[in-house]
Length: 469
Image (cartoon, rainbow, N blue to C red):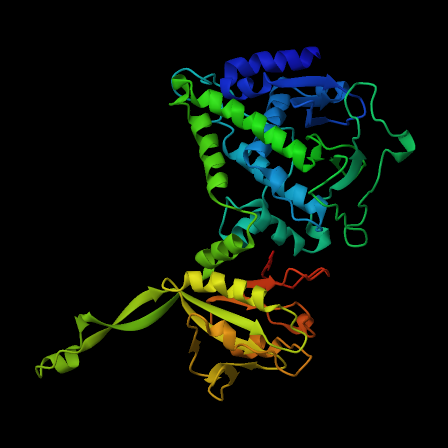
């Protein structure tokens, strides 16, 4: 083993027995084909491939920070949460930003705790220049601790020249099991390079079924950034890595000395939170957006506050009370191009109906124009009244019918109808919108797309959720 690695592992035993415990189960294997480090799985064991020159270039504290960085990717379950068919570089960048920001926030407390475990006074540091959550995102969203999926969507909507100047190389890693290197020839070493993100976006699938691949961040000069290689593992490898990690965490939990350790308790809370919530679920994603954004102020009448105007005359009537009510406006694209299948429309409104009781749902329809629906027998037809909202009731989705027009225009909705509104706008559409360039920005907006859509959908604002039926 490299002397620098031995030094770091020895120091980890003093700084954090939790991190040290994990890396005692990892085999460190030298491989000069890896530009930095890569945590992988081989023969059911955790392995860390490392470039000796890279490791020697780091201080003990910097390499320690990178080991914690790689462990936190596992803790946050990033391997299982890739968005298939989308920008691979930005997804990995968002994940790195989340982990790096966590480390920056906990740099003074990660190696300190009770009961003498991990109580050595030390800072958790990373090599300089690694990306963190942008301040602009925090200002716009009001959230300093986002999920990486939310951060990725925000990055995707930013102008290319505002994205950190980072490039990637994608490395094949078949039979990547010894220091002799790769089983492929040197000329095939680099499979794909995203030199221009707009012209050549990397859209590698995450759920690999064959050979794994490694993504390496590179700076503007073409040198590998001082961070780990991201692995695109197949399902079997991910399951094995998770099983190994869970076994280690379980063994640590059995040790009563860890009960008061702040770092381990905090990491355990992250693991339990991710386990309890299916963050890959589009339904969960919609609910989280609704809970975060949809509320507005309204007047209501209540007997808890009597009407003083009539009370002096002996008449007790309910008075008006101002309270916060949560409102959600759901817009359905009913144009002829709408290709949502009935089961997908039912699933989308199943999420909406699960929110009723807590939220008042206003239903709006759009094709060439925007209209509030009204019931006409067993279907919805346009109402002439634009001032009175239609309050959605359970099962109303069955009355929604596709109109004759093949054109979808959303400018009437955003540029006229939503003036003065501030509640969350949930739009169910196939994404074929002809006037996207002329829409006035409305925030917050969530676009819900059908599962069968293959073309990329990049609205000028809002969040995008794709149904998976």
